[in-house]
Image (cartoon, rainbow, N blue to C red):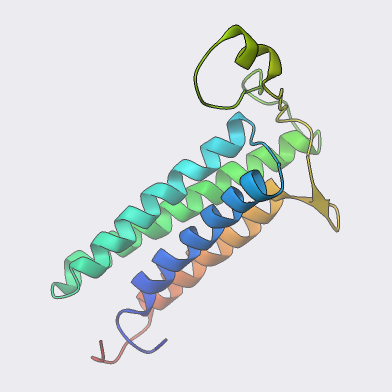
Length: 160
């Protein structure tokens, strides 16, 4: 599979699906509400999913497939870069650019506003080995983007 010319677009599709899925599981399964910068990290993953899916749909045209796979890798890397910035805010290396508080979505009412969780971007809600979720997103996103780019550069077989 990794020698196939489709390896890069498949990895470019799988990585953001897994990372975005992990964000949704942590939000809805474990109650870790996202802050504003958490949402910023999700948008490039959503774009990468669409770009990689389009790359796979265009697999008959190698140049188009490779172009959209490259764009997906760039989107994944952008999420990683935002993750670095967010982790730096959480660790106090630099200041965030917003007030970094957000509430949950849904109908807006006084009760909803008063009961909405206030989530700050400068405080990690969860860490493992001292690495926050933003830090893990940075590590995995940048690693996945580098892997996709490596796969794109390799000479591949004609297998599909």
